[in-house]
Every structure is written in structure tokens, then in C-alpha cells.
Image 1 (tube, one colour):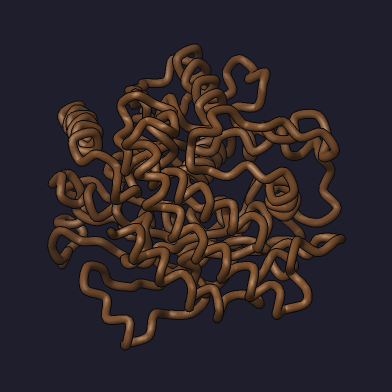
Image 2 (cartoon, rainbow, N blue to C red):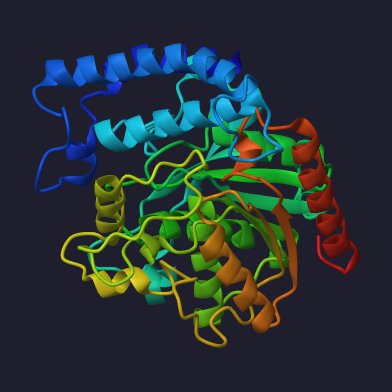
Length: 418
């Protein structure tokens, strides 16, 4: 019912957000399906949403009667139907260029938004003297300030109190297109639940720049929050990097930048949840050759034209395909050189064996082990991509994952970190 209500709400959202289609997001050389004229675009989106809602009970019945085969034996009939539902909605976003849960990162939340679980805080943008290495880009400069939605277990009135437990820096997923750090966003299920584990003093959910801002805009924003915490006196061994999907891509790049520049110390650890660690997977040799990702049973869409525009927009104008395989962008692009992830902080990795990113994460896990990075892996059987944000996924499975995360955090704390 939660997913059906969410889908119903998408219809009026789509009506207001349709001008922000793929043409304004990516500026492609050719328009997307039904993007013009506007009337057909509106009609296509609304009909697609309505038809998806109508199909949901039909899919559930077909799975229950075993007329439609369940992709994974452990998935219930409603679960299979909801995965199909989300895949169709994700496909709509790819085809029609819709964006979910996005807000302007340069604007402070209005009083009417009534934040009940978090507070909003501006953090000073990346200092120019810190914009070194890959963060120094003539085409992409740091912003003056970066917004954060701060989850707190209690008020921190002093630096001593702030340093008692872990401080999380969270970068949300969404293919650099969707979602936000706002507490109402679907991805906020992760910091919300992590705060319940009792291991964090606070978590800073970063409102980083999305597309069309290219690389390294998001990395600059998240790095700014890390540096700001250090400047306030929070030691790095009290900080945990947290990233799901695209957020994992950002955190891997940030750990690499810290290692390569050698100026700052690594954080206490990185919590990576279904990290997108190889954007080059879909286009391994050129932008003309598309390589489909595995596990079509996952809810992630794999529309070739949309994947192309995402990676090209992320690279930015006039950047060659070869940059897509750069380790800051695709750290698990094959082959991964020896030592590529050496001296990374301890990692907890969670992903599923039914998600489209399985192969690229498998490669990253192997590289982390080869380079002797302290690593804990939770590979969830029959788990889809980023399942911790899905309200319909089995609570026992999610609780088991969070228990392992809690154990990992406690082990880090007992080793003298946190």
C-alpha cells in the first residue's frame, strides 16, 4: 500500500516537474521520446503511471498463481510485483527524464517544510587551498556553502561532547540525478535507521550538487563537509563515510583523494551500500558500444540511451571516453591495478546477488582484499540494489544487515576509533 500511495503521488509531481526533462538535465544532441510536444509528454507520463498502478494487482495475482515465474524463489508474490512496479517506474524516469525527490541544493529549506527529525546547517564550501589534485578543476569550482541535513542523537554543546561517538557523513544515491539529503527522501531511511543503532552522535546528510553539474562537483561538496568537521576539532578517527549507490561512488573517490594527496588522515571507516563503483561498465570501450548490466530481475532500469547521457553528463563537456575509466570515477573498472585501493580506511560492504551492480562490486571486494584493506562483507542472498531504502523489503533481512553494521561499528570503536 505504501508503494501504491507513493505512485499515486507521482502523478501530480510529474505534472509540475515535466519541464525538467532529459533535455534540460543532459542537453543531449537529440530529444528523448515524447519530450516534444509538451502535451504528448504529459500524456505519456500520466498514462504510464496509471497503467503501472493498474498492473500492480495483476502482477501480484499472476505471481501468486504461479502463472508468472518468480525470478527468485525467496521473493514473495507481492515482493515480485513491487520489484516489477519499481522497475517500470525507473524505466519511466529513464525514458521521460523525470527526477524524483530533488531539491535545489543552494536554497535553505523553507519554514513550511517543518523538519522534525533533522536540522539544516550550512557548511563552508571547499577552501580554495584544499582544491588540489582531482578537486582542482578549471570548469567546476567549489560552491561558497554546502547544505547538510543533520541527524542528531542529542545536542552537541561542546567539541568534547561531539567527539564522544562516531560522526557520519552521508552521501545519498540516485545516479547523480535523483533524491536529496532531506529527511523526507526515500534514501533517508538509511541515516534514520543508523541513528537508532546508538553508535553515532550525528550524521551529516550532504546536499551535494547533482547533474548537470559534472565531476568533481559532488566530490568537492562532500570533501568540504569532511574538512569542515576536521576544522571544528573532530578527529578523523571519529568520522565514518556512508554512501549508498552513487553516494558510495563519491565516498570511494574521497578516500582515494585523501590517500593520494597525503595531507589529511583517512576516516575511521567507510560504510558502502550497493556502491556504484564502475560507471564505465555500460560503455567499457566506447560510447558507441553498450554493455548491458546483469540481473534484469533487479528493479534498476538499464535504458542504453539514458545510461549514455548520464555518464556523458557526469564527465562534462568535451571530456573523452577514456576519462570514464579513471579510478576516481570507475574504481572497479577492469583490470584494477595492484595497489589501487591500498591504504583505504576499513570498509563495510553490503550488496546483493540479485542486483545489477553485483559484478562490479565483486571486483572491488576482490581488490580490497588483495590490497589488504580491512573489510567486512555482507552479500545478501537474493538482495536487490540498495535494498535498505525499500519499504517493502523484508524487515528481518534489513534488521540482520543493520545488526552486522552495528557489530562492525562497535569493533571499530573498541579498536580505539570512535
